[in-house]
Amino acid sequence: MATITRIPSEILEEIFYQSLPTLFKGPNGLPRIHADGEEDPATLEQELTESFTSDDEVDSTRMTLKCICRSWRNLVLDSPKLWSRLEVNAVEFQKDPQRLMTLLDRSKNHDLEIKLISVRSKQDNFMSANIQLNRPARGLQQFSEVPDCSPQAVINILRDQFHRLRVFGIDCNAHGSVDHLAHFFPQNIRSSFPRLEHFFAISNCHPLRAGSIGYIEAPQLKSCFIPQGLDVLWKAFSPSTQKNLTRISLVVHNEQLGQGEKFLSLCEHLQTLSLTVSRSFGRALGNFPYSFSVSSEFPRLQSLSLKLDSAEQYRSISQYFKFPELRFLTARGNGFTSVACIENLLERNPRLRELRLDKFSFEEYPNHLLSPLTELRSLVVSRSLPRKNFLRSNFLPQPHTNQFSLPNLEISLLRSLQLVSQFQKPCFK
Image (cartoon, rainbow, N blue to C red; front, side, top):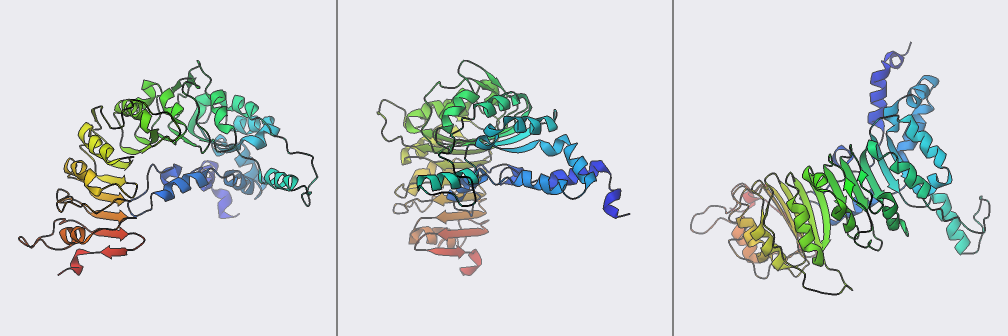
């Protein structure tokens, strides 16, 4: 008898579950909130977008396990845990909603991980492209048109499973799919997610109007990724939903900065925050608070990534936001933002261990800018051109003391179009 046939079914089931691909890239199969210190921050946005491609890896893995032998097939079909992770292509399942219900029934009452993708199948995309070119798709039946299926049936089925969702990702990049959020979270109806811990959404479509969706109640929510254009989502979070959040990636427009501040002030357990403030071109300007003005303290925050719209916002956030336990900071400018604007932010957080500066101007660099960071171990400067005074003040011994201003620095990387270098203190004698 083969050794593998003597493995208890409970252990074999766990092996199968661990072999299933995760729905997202990143630690524990969840999207990262912001890039690591040595990475280009733009890679994170690309990584999340790629996570929402329709590759059917999870279903393909289950199918492979089912085809090995009869006992494995029975084990896969009878294991609710192996059917608790699903990639749902809304267009595909709209054609056969009963199939989606069958898959969900197999998971029984197990917590669900679902990634909803609102894109056409590869076959439909191929057929649609050929139809637009007025030529038949080779090897496929010729259709006069490709049906544009509304995923309302899929939405209704998934709404009935909200009570079981633990991980939920929504792709709103398909044409019109962002409007389906209003059907997922109907206005004047509280959508309850008693088990939801992680929520992610992506969208490059037009934004929804304010108040177009109802309240979202998810008291166990720990992490969320909400991009530009989907601000209605975080505005719909109930206070109990915000209370236990530990990881957030948030994009707010300038005119929404005040609302964004109030939202974050209720997230008292935050440990990781990625905050982007962007301009809203084409919208009427008014008397909006373009600087931070609400005092907030985040006693547990250790990792912070900022991409703010102006130097004044960097100055004001250091004045009103307190991060007593901050250890990892990424600050991104626009190419013209002076690095001097983060001076107060660094002074208030001297225990930083990792600092990433991206797209800042070093024309007006204060020589003492990094001197408070005596515990700094990693420094990365990317898409910027540091001046000589920056290099002298941080990588050479100080003339009067013969000591380095950053005594614990272990890694320092300078990356730009003109300069790609790695400095280590032993190189300077």
